[in-house]
Image (cartoon, rainbow, N blue to C red; front, side, top):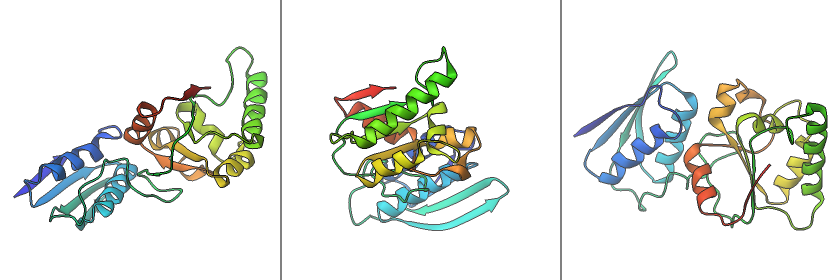
Length: 209
């Protein structure tokens, strides 16, 4: 039996969650999902690879992708969608390190009354984080906060220092795509709403900047 899923125009992480749900039910032999986002495609491919299933075909037509997945029994039980290992610039997230404190960045400035002062304060804050002995476990960047992680940001060097020290840096893939900055990312790994929400909900120490 084939399960057909039309996930075009659905926001992150809905396409990935629809695939996960179809696989978890164990009913279809093949799941065929249509998406029109390269980020959604990469998220799905990473997850399928993690649960040891097979992508049997990918049809690309313009900006649309039709992905066929064979749902034979995986070598391990399907993991949560956020448990996918990824490289820095890939689409689906995971890191099983202890989270520690999470700092959530939803802007590239601190405060909104004085933009120049706000940029200076944010630069100083990230520099201080990089110099602290007691570092956070995770940094999450969404909305305009992602501008701190892309080409042109004065904080790239300090964020790379934090990443090198073991801090997990998550950058919202939908935000990168919306602001057309996908090719400008310089630090961190592209994540999705499912992973970000899971991390926030599972942490007792979240600070928003």
